[in-house]
Length: 205
Image (tube, rainbow, N blue to C red; front, side):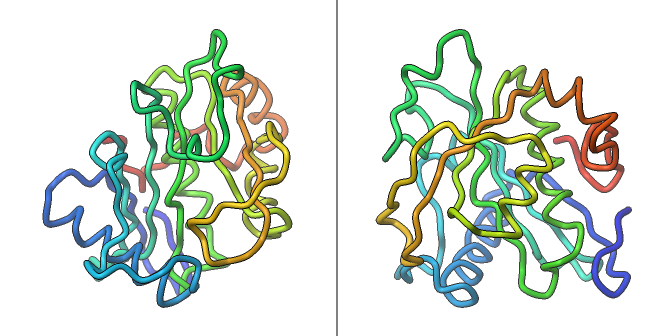
């Protein structure tokens, strides 16, 4: 198992049960709305959408069984990908099999730990198992901690900067892509500690 801040044991698990999914969606609301102020409050107290029914949803738990992180992997399909609300990907899809990694958020008490890397690693492992060729995501421009993490994984820009009206955090957003084959080839020598070797703290689901 991996240890986070203060030696707290962390595990990352794919969530499928309705009650556990509701707890995960409530964690998202508490974190995105109350802690970060990035999204407007929803009357349900949940952050969820129709893509959650199609996604692989993951929660990170501490040793007390409390959710401390969230991440989902959305496979490409008839509904497209969530980021296509604003960025068309039809031209980018040629001969690619895409998934989108999104709703990645860490509780404030665990920021600065390895939890963000572990969640990214879980997403990468799911994308490989899904036989995807590229992982897509979007992020705020100049968001130092997140952007640095994505660059370390090998993500590159595939869009111009744009505004996302869903978020109350008024900063431009950019879409990034990771070539999975290139990551598997290059990361063992460049970033061997990131995510090529399976992590026993991550349930492959």
